[in-house]
Image (cartoon, rainbow, N blue to C red):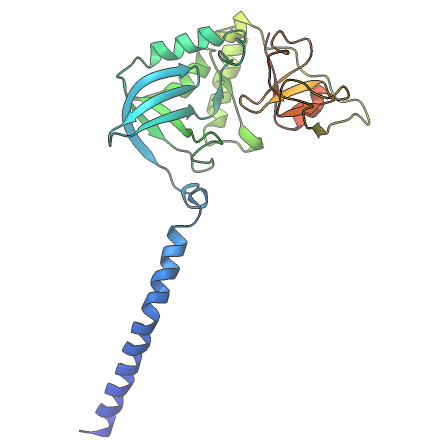
Length: 255
């Protein structure tokens, strides 16, 4: 055989051998890139699921039976409604009723994630836009005044601007919560040198005397001592001032 042809065969064999030896490592690398933390992969992709409503838990939380059969709990992304479980807040029952009217049991829905947000919250609830046909139910609740726009950790979701426009119109026309409860008392601006720190609770139901304001991480609502639900609120964080609570991502209870 001609030397040139022989050399080509040898080089080709070496290339094939190197590729075969490298393939397990390449496979492992590919696997590590696709099976890393779910949030790092999913946060850049939109996930869509279809299912049926099995229960409206409250104004911003629903249970859905997915087409594949799995039952999931869904937190409506980008909105927040008054509490009905850890103390009934003004408008809570009405907001829940509005959600039940929009999403009766058995309703077909489409769930859509937002690529700028996490796929789940700390309670393992799916964070999704919930659509009924062409209707964005999250936005409809805001438009009718039964929900407020909620931006988590100061990271706007993709529909923040349109939701905020609808909230402004609802607020200006005293719709839903805005007419029933008002907008709540805004926290005063922090005085110079005020304490904006977060403190741990003294016990299950109490905060230390220097930081009496209770921050509940289940709802991200803070309760000053004047709140009617203050005594039954279990705090995860305590604050010396309302400005401190706001600085840490909490909003004031409406009452």
